[in-house]
Length: 621
Image (cartoon, rainbow, N blue to C red):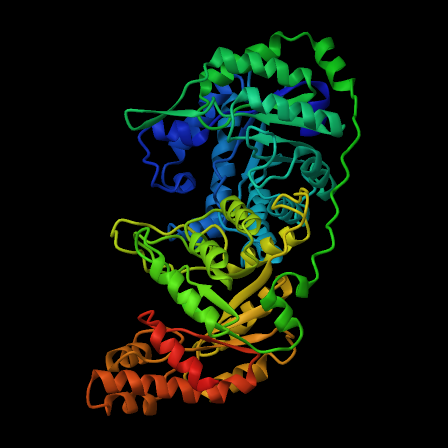
């Protein structure tokens, strides 16, 4: 039998089209696990393969795009990785065997499809590259056991993750690998990496064929293919969507006709594409027309295009720039760098547009020589954005702001844009947090979206400080963000908290602010455990507003340790007014006990009452 790569040397191969589109058209709802159909409805999956083979496909991909442990776990199928992948190969092989007889234009190949994990890996997510490789290796081993001829690693937005998948495959099989990134209309990956950089990286890691698939239609993909052809002599692949989907009566309809797709297949081949097919929205009829177009092309013209390699100059990978020295970033940064203690006070963004009270509070804090105002990003609903209030405070109150920035409800590129905008408006101190998963504001149907967590956010800020964007491309002048993170000394799982804190420091954290601490012994134990991490710690102090507030903090706030003696003192107060005063006295005592152990104090109040924070501040001084 001729191998896949040998066949690519002889002729252009046609890959199949969308599996999900066809299964959906056959009545499988999109909330189902399509890959599990390899076990529950193998005949249905095989019928889709056979339709593409009858249409002229030379390569069919196994129905295993999302059959990794991470994605299958969401359906309660994490223990079915091996079975689902092996069954996927078996079903595809059965389809090729039925149609092998009578083919005169060469053999057909079964490609093991491997897609992204569906989670962010380092440096953007908490999953390590080694863990990602293990997930991919588990899937690749099952596909090898099933007997695939080639692997197609596809629809990757993160070059780092695509390389992890290739490394995992190379650890278990020498089979050919087709590696395909998914790109925007500008030709760069969805995370901003240009083809001039991702193509050489994929080849270096072990890919035999490189290309692009999904996200865009044929026209923008052709421009990306032209860029790929200019920087690599490797064989290329192209599998576009059937255009961009249109919402027609609640359904996504792909409008690129089979004839239109076929016309672009010829253009792809003219730029040295040797594997051409389709992705979302493409049907057997699209593949039929593409196959016919490929067959009609003169063999000598195809060979001429294959041999005509005109490589341009490969762009050199951009180099990181030296970051702005820490003490030059902000007044808070200079104080911490010089070992001086700082005092911060929290403020909460107001409801609506009226921010006069918040600005008045900031002016009062500036008059008290507070070093910075920390603007919270926690509350939701109809509130002003934390970024907007932080800018107004710096402009109108003359005091530095520490912007608490949450990853919640933003994707990685949106976060990047926000941070660049904040830096352009003069914000320097950024306190990165993952955000609250459960508190969704006042709208019961609201949802939370997380693309990265605080570790990924810290990595992003560090990269921006070195003049590079998410995709590793230069942004011009580096940002000068003073990178802060949150840490919780009182959490029940302190080992996990310390591991994550170490990751944040490794990623570039320059200071940390703790959650409110109500027990100095807890803080002492925490400091002893982080002795090797040379990061200034600003300790959080919060006065109780009432007995109910003290009981709430002690019983309902995860990760907060409130000694029973403090709750008893609050309960002993004769009325609400005396309870509030007792809360300030407790915070005063805690502040005096904690401040010598830290490089600063952050004072907050559950109700946002500035009077309580000022009372604690005056007592501390």
